[in-house]
Length: 193
Ligand SMILES: Cc1cc2nc3c(=O)[nH]c(=O)nc-3n(C[C@H](O)[C@H](O)[C@H](O)COP(=O)(O)O)c2cc1C
Image 1 (cartoon, helix red, strand yellow):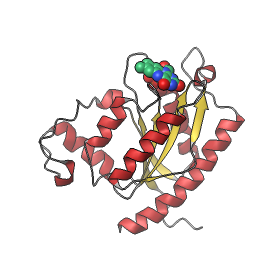
Image 2: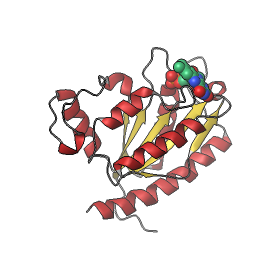
Image 3: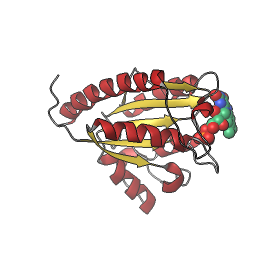
Image 4: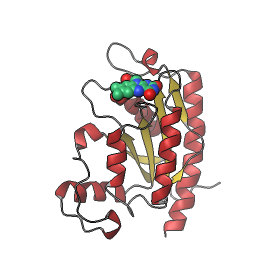
């Protein structure tokens, strides 16, 4: 398939915000990998830095009657995206609250865009969390990409400097996921136009 627009915008979003969180190491790794592919304008959105409060808008996001500056800023950031990757932890067999909160703030800005997942955790590698969040994003008309990267016992890939180094299997699964994401990025861009 020929790419009609080689440089779409992709936003890579973290899911955790706690002090000492390890997900940022995984997020930095996938961000670099996507940059190397040179298929997207890449931006890493770190929810710990963006620091959204618990969803505090009086109206349903469908109405876009945003009262708060943080929402207007978040809306503009998500609106310019053509594709997303969520770097997803698993908290108590489910998705961490900050990513659900960030999603709930908006509606049309997410709509008809593809969303892929890089999950990490213990033995499950964040699989349960991913399956749960895939269901949620369909409510806002997003297209969850089937191929996903799941990283069990992810801590063993992070060194003392907080650098995540993927093995061959993880890199391969990321390449498969990114290929699929690129297809959906083009298909859904056409659909939105
Ligand atoms: C509140 C909490 C709940 C957790 N529950 C799970 C879990 O259900 N499954 C899992 O694989 N790991 C679980 N863990 C371990 C996380 O995989 C690990 O702490 C990871 O570093 C969390 O991501 P973060 O460092 O980006 O916050 C949990 C960790 C926390 C803090």
